[in-house]
Image (tube, rainbow, N blue to C red; front, side, top):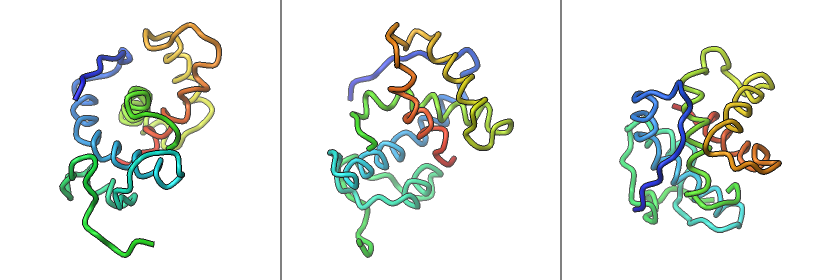
Length: 145
């Protein structure tokens, strides 16, 4: 798999990176399932939110990206994972850093994250960039640890 180098905020630590590394594949699987459920691509992985949580916590093994979870009673946000991962990681790391101050997504948090993101090396100097990534940042922020 191709490695993507990306910008991280000044407060980003090795702890943030290690934690993201543990949950990355679980969230990626959830992303693929969400896209499939919304009929905008993705893959049927039989992935539920409870699977994502167990996988992220290390309580359940993470199958390879295109292998389904074991069968259960079965009753993306639009985008490619490579495009979604940087803002999702930013949101997830922001939760680790600021979650005690902002346990829920709110205007103040969004404003601060938007300013930081738009001043980063990740942000092309185009209008509307935050609007393009905000949902992905929030997706990462709202992911349960």
